[in-house]
Image (cartoon, rainbow, N blue to C red; front, side, top):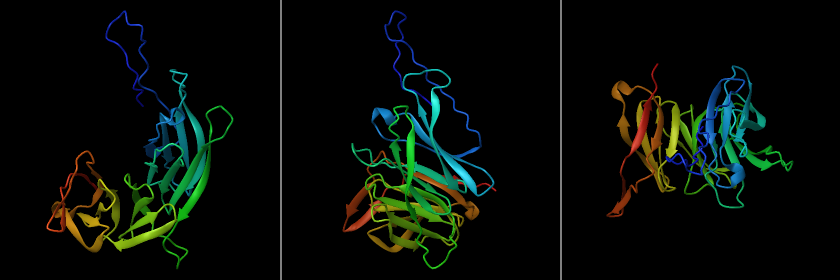
Length: 265
């Protein structure tokens, strides 16, 4: 963990050098983590971590930095809550506007949304309340595990999940309903990521392909990459620092700028 304190190169500077490396040791193996994006002082240097325990009962902890301490004990557990199975992914909401809800999402057997609030004690501790449990399979008590998800930065009401049942689902956080669900791959889908904007996303899976979708027209998808010998692809990430969408003759084209990770077996 890095504290972006500013220190001077001059020995007579009145500014003191700040500690930049902090360590927190969890009591269990860490399987997933996510940094908070909120800018208010009480939410800076805050991350959520999920356990990896080979049992049904797992946990998620929220770790914060004590702003008044630079000691080895500066990081502390501000909250902990139970979670069924290890989280395949954790993400804080990209919504950072003043007054917006402080939300955290996790995937495992289902997509869960959690609401985070200060407990009012003045000791920097947090209360966690489950806001929603989202499941699009209403006809069965069984569910296909979710492998990953992504939270749309342009439209924070939108979350996309990927599943081992070959589908991707786009959820509306506000209505807690699925906007659309589609068969995305021939085999398990391992990851999904939104591009810059709110319409385009890509996915990777066990069939070794990267497929791109446009929510404005889901009739067709585009296979933009296939791995050699169709090895499974585990993760992908968009480069969102560039503007990549252009329009020509009423057809949308995308500049592909993705990082893709192979699943080595």
